Amino acid sequence: MSIQKSIERIIAPPAPHMVGDGFRVHNFFPGEMEGNLARLSPFFLLDYNALMEWPPREQPRGVGVHPHRGFETVTFAYHGRIAHHDSAGNSGVIGEGDVQWMTAGSGVLHKEYHEKEFSRKGGPYQMVQLWVNLPAKHKMTAPKYQAITAKEWGLCEIPESGVNVRVLTGTFKDVKGPASTFTPIEIYELILRKGSSISFDLPQQYNTGLLMIRGEAMVNGHEIPTDHFAIFKNDGENIAIEADEDATMLLLSGEPIHEPIFSYGPFVMNTREEIIKAYEDLNKGLFGYLED
Image (cartoon, rainbow, N blue to C red):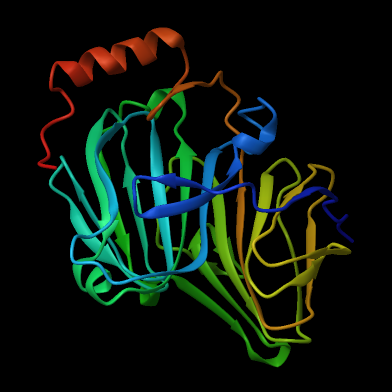
């Protein structure tokens, strides 16, 4: 029988801050990792826009043109609609259940903002943005974009137990996720009805965290409230969940990248020299052009 992964910490939503004028986020990591940038490697950053209501506005809120290099951004939409454009020629709009996965790689400019019709009407808004680090050998890979609709996620339905598992990356009970990754990563959305339960295993060495999007549940013997983030120790394989009420949670688990991390602003690299080079390349126009 597998050993449970102990829960190391349960983090309440940190004080929110604005990213641009359209994203009011709680930064669970790396801000709460006390300087340990690699604690949840290969995941580097998690910004969570908890459920809120935006009033109508003609001019869409968002974040203007900015650069990235050395990692990937993964944006999950739960409520509201988000638009994206980048200097590699990619664009798209995601709504409830959809994901946009942008590989910045060698360098890209992009902008993100509330979709025009959503902005005009206003309404509930909830999203997650995850930064996934790239290993040194892939940091200068060509930029790419994966638009994954809600229907394209892998779906494992377990009707007898009242559980659905949506699979974005990796494999859950033979159901494979559609997103491609550069390192081994498992990302699941777990949807449990009140009174239901589920148990599954992940590799012990994988760094694992769980964000409670809706409701609350007992996870490996600990109550995880809405909008809280749990970090698991690397001391076992099993995760057992019992839902006290209808609950939705986002599970992140991946093989750590055992390399130095040097980050500054919108860049995540391995050395200070690579950060300097990123800014030099940006100033030379090597990240392309994107109208603000």
